[in-house]
Image 1 (cartoon, one colour):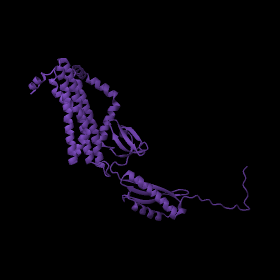
Image 2 (cartoon, one colour):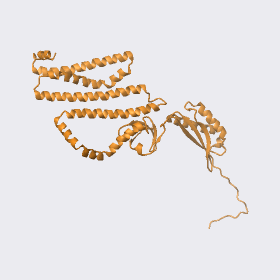
Image 3 (cartoon, one colour):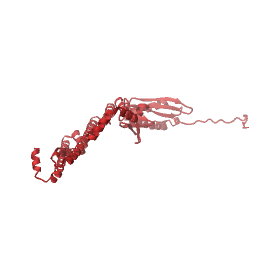
Image 4 (cartoon, rainbow, N blue to C red):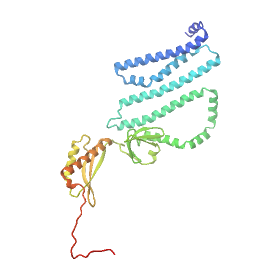
Length: 364
């Protein structure tokens, strides 16, 4: 087959073969890519396939680069070039093929992640097991991406004889180099080890609700070196991984997303506690966010002019609990205003007239 192609190409001038064979191979690769992904789109429209849709989304751009380079590498022996220019072109095509293949492997990981996200819904209410899985998978994906990039760059560099000799020389001094690198990058290595610890012991997970440095937020991203918290007002708090190993913090969703919260009221001593307790029960039973776990009203403190009431309420997650606490507070205050306005906080003063025979006190 190759001999027949060479006999056919010998009929044309070398300049046409040198230009036509690579361009034809690139065009053939693009046509093959277009036909392949057109078939995937047709299959997706007919079968509603998440796999075909994800492959089309993540691998389309990669394939537009990989298939033409692959076709060019296959027909490269047919290009009539002198040995040195041919070796340069062969090395260049080899580099492109290695890098495009590594890019395709990385995008294949995105396809796998996309399919897992379709199967496991992170937005569901009870998502503890899903958050555990996604935290581990996200860290493993980053490690695999780093390894793919490292191997791809290593293959490209090791194709040079000079780099191979340099690598052999470095191996002889690996002990000294490891000590120097370890000392210089000890904080980076510490963060990497902390990342492994967080990924598998999981003091925090993706979508966990944390209170850190006085800020309430959800874990949005966990990288090799830092954690990103999405604060409730859409700010982002970025913290190093070591922070979650060395310092205390609050994790509101460590074992479950369900939470209990308190609503405090400061009222007059004349407040009818039993009536207010019955109103709290009525408010919670009518509210869709209450999960029916906690409904308690207690007098928790008594001060000079007011008593402190604490209402305990519960909900399925932190967002629902916040909304439920606000609604409960508003309705309890409105109830007191309508039915027991005298029970709202007030300041009492007792004024007594001075007796006629009482001497006046004067300073000095």
